[in-house]
Structures are given as C-alpha cells and as structure tokens.
Length: 191
Image (tube, rainbow, N blue to C red):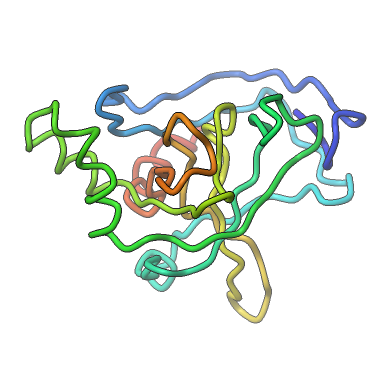
C-alpha cells in the first residue's frame, strides 16, 4: 500500500482475506468487484491518505451519474507505456447509459443478449480522448466529490473494470457501479 502520492511512502499491508464476488465472470465482465479485508488498521496520519465514502444513503444511491464529472486515480500505465511511479488521477464525465451500450455493443455481440444486459445494468462508462484509466488501474476508484452533512468528501461510485486496448482513445472505460453492490459490500464487511 502506498501512503501518499509516490512510492517513497510505500508500506506493506498484510491482507487477511480477499473477498471476490461469488458470481464474478471475466467475459463479459460481470460482478467485477472484490473487497480486501486488511489484517490491521490503516494509518490515516499520512498527508492525503483518508478513507473514501460509499454511497450508502438513499440520496447518494440515487445520484444520477450521467454527465457528472468524477476522478479516477491509479498506478497503471501512462501515456509513456510505463507503470506510474506516482499516483495518477484524471477528471472526466460519465457517459450516458445509451452511449455506453453503443460503445460496448461491438465487444458484447459475441455473447448472448441476456449476458450483455446483465453486464450493462451494473456498469457505467466514462472517459474522453486523452483522458482515461488504463491497464493496471483495475480495482481503483471512480469518485465524485460530494457534500454530505455540510462536509465535502469523495464518494466512490465506481471500480475500474475494463476498457479499450489503447488507453486514452475515443472509446470509454467501464466501471462497476458501486451503488448496485452496496448490500453485497455491507454484508461482506461485517465480522
């Protein structure tokens, strides 16, 4: 785990248990979400290290993401073709559901329509030319800064799932919609 924005502050954090979704499928990507239960407490005393909020209130769960701007952060490939040595982030808007279906149709034409519909109902997409998540960012957050009870916080609405082979192209990346998995998350974080 990196405690901050660069590898200088890397710290090994033992994982007690990985909890993948029991109905995960890689192709087409379905239920692409997992939790890591850490062995010990996470040290939040480092600058820029803080917990991220989940959209658990009805107000946050019902947020319409279409055309909202959010931030993706990760340690994946950069435009140089190398893995980032500092935490990268980029802001862009969520595409409409109809746009996501149009972009994704070419990939999913090889699967039965039922699988296609199941995949799309639990994902959203976003990105624009030159702004995208990339290989190595999978599992990272798509977050939106929201104000809740007069406090500004990042809320994680998505988990980087998959995208085009060429990062930063005109084809968007896809995110597992965290709001669709809140009950699963809450059921699995209890001891």
